[in-house]
Length: 220
Ligand SMILES: Nc1ncnc2c1ncn2[C@@H]1O[C@H](COP(=O)(O)OP(=O)(O)OP(=O)(O)O)[C@@H](O)[C@H]1O
Image 1 (cartoon, helix red, strand yellow):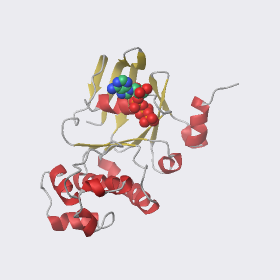
Image 2 (tube, protein in one colour):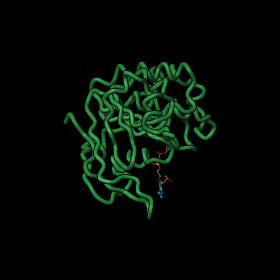
Image 3 (cartoon, helix red, strand yellow):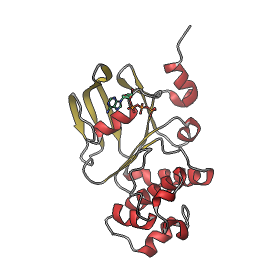
Image 4 (cartoon, protein in one colour):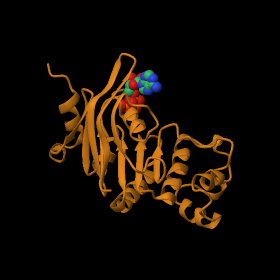
């Protein structure tokens, strides 16, 4: 399947409308970026698309949602009382030997760190652990919600290179606010505004910062 997405989706939390007959189509081999201010509904959209949140109306086209996917949220969802190694083994269904894990991991976290319980990790270290799991899985659908938060310069450079080298056979969906990072890698821009999602085709001319201002700065 080369296109996945949502069709005519509506969602509200009590009296707060998040989406009103919203549509979005993601294409294989492209890095898609969803842009919008805090609280507009980006995380909710991802949860609905992954079947993690109920929708009021509409259709989800996502054959990968129950398997073959990776979603990284800011709270990371790691096992706090287990070591980094154990987390990796559990999330990758024990498919990789410790040697293989070590080889992929060394760029991100030391052996010593991976032997420590995750509750002792910083935000950035937890993120790096999640990214090791992502690289090992390399699933056809990868979604990262605000992935840049907490990552240092070197990790961001590695992440950028990995996203670019893996994207060919994947659907990659990103959200966040660090425009300098996203601008350098994305192919498609989706703007979340007025309970709908608009595909912007001209953002490359202006860049993400100016495009954001165009959509979200109130005109006086
Ligand atoms: N389970 C819930 N129950 C009620 N309201 C919710 C629930 N989940 C999210 N919301 C509200 O829906 C709105 C959209 O939230 P969401 O987290 O999707 O925004 P976001 O665009 O991802 O924001 P940010 O950029 O700050 O991460 C917010 O006002 C939030 O408080």
